[in-house]
Image (cartoon, rainbow, N blue to C red; front, side):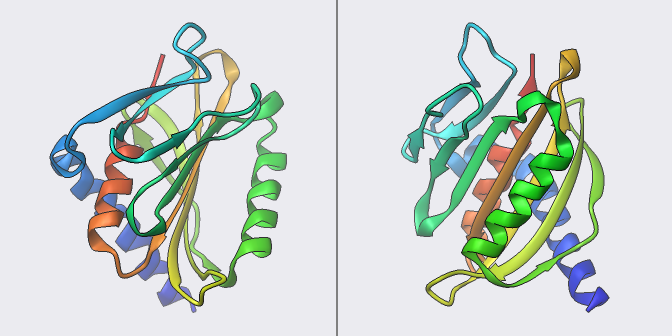
Length: 173
């Protein structure tokens, strides 16, 4: 079981590194998303312009992105910087929406100068499709904590690279 976790982590790390070299070439034209707003920006991500973007409904909500092949990404600032509640919410969401969940060990990384923890995993969705799952929490200036998560078809190499490019575009203010 540990080797499955290591394999999942190695795959996620490889995708993050590969995405750094692909950048906008994978995505084509991109739209810079300012969370929560441009005027009150805590962080930005660059999203392919032809993907569906759904702004958060309230200041604590997720900004959601949908790409090809049911690729999903979500971003937010953790309410009250409560990392324990954020992780618990993430685990509850996974249990509610996926089966056969396997999560690897958390990995500390730096994304464009932001200290982060990534939590890679795999699971099976309601359509019995294997999905690569990933979550991360990153420190923002002023004591805030940002959160990201994604899921992509495990067999979709292009989708994984595109999701990684979006995640690697993350920048704080």
